[in-house]
Amino acid sequence: MMTNLEPRRTIFFPGRHDPLPKTERPRDLEAFPAPDHVSIPTITEMVGAIDAAKLTVHYQPQIDLSSGAIQSVEALIRWDDDRHGMLYPAEFLPFAMESGFASAFTDFVLGRLLSQLVLWRRFNFQFGGTLNVPAAVMSTPNFVDHLHRQVARMGLRSEDLIIEITEGVATCDDIVVLENLLELCQKGFGVSMDAFGTDVAAPTKLERLPLTQVKTDRSLMVEAASRPHLRSALQAGAAGAKQHGLKITAIGVERDQEWQLLPQLGFDGAQGHYIAPPMVAEALPDWVTH
Image (cartoon, rainbow, N blue to C red; front, side):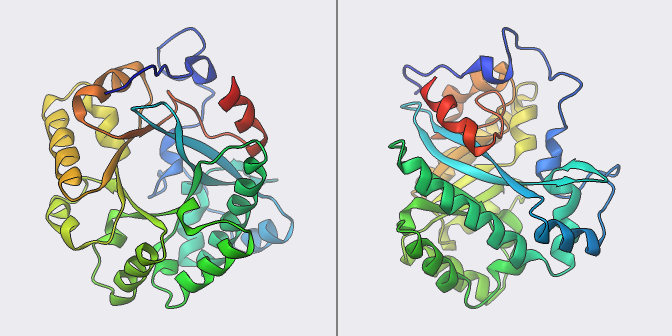
C-alpha cells in the first residue's frame, strides 16, 4: 500500500490531469521498435555524434510505492543532432544496434551514469542507477567483468547498479546471455527485465531466470484503466513475480488513471511521466528536494 506518497504533479501536470500538451514528444520514442515516421540517421552521423559529444543522458526516477523514496534512476540516452534535432532512443538506437554501435553507446551511457551516481552521493542521495543493455552487449562473453571493473573504478558497489534487459533477451536461448545474467546476480548487480507481460510464456520462465526485478510493459499499464482484463492480468503478473521473490514495477504511469490503479495491482514500484519525466542530471537534486 502507498503511504504518505503524493506524485509531484507540478513537474509534469501543472494543476491538471488531462493528456499531454501537443508539444510533448511521444513517449513511444523511448522504446523499440521505432515508429514509422522516424528518420534514421546515417552511420557517419552516429560516429560524429560520439566524437562531437552530441550524446547526452536524461534520468527518470523509479519510486518505491510504500515509502515514496527513489529506488533508482533509469539512464535514457538522447542525441542532440544538428539536422534532426533532439533524437530519442527509438529514433536511432535500433539502427545503431544493427550497425555495430551497441558497445559504444552502452559504454557512453554507463560512464555518464556512474559519474552521476558519484556526484549525487555528495547530496547524500543513495539511490542506484538503471542501465539498459541490448542483446548484442549482453551476449558478449567479457561483459560482466568489464562492467564490474568500471563500477569498482568509480568507487561504487555492484549493488548500486541495475542492469535492465528486455523480455526477449531474458528468455532467449543464448547460453552466453544466460551465463552473464547469472554472473551479474552473483556479483551483486540488480537484474531487471523490462516489458514483462508481452510474452505469454514468460511467467513460466521466471523460475529459471536469474532476475531481481521485473517491469511491466508500458502499453499494458497505459491501457489498464479502461480494460478490466488487463488489470486482472497485471495483478496476476505481480503475484507471480512475488512468488519468485522478485520486485515488480509499473512502467507507463502517465496519468492519474494509472496512478489510482496502483494500490489494487500489487506493485512494489512505479515509473512514468505522472511521477517525473526524464530530466537532465542537474535537475534531479532540485526535483528530489522540492
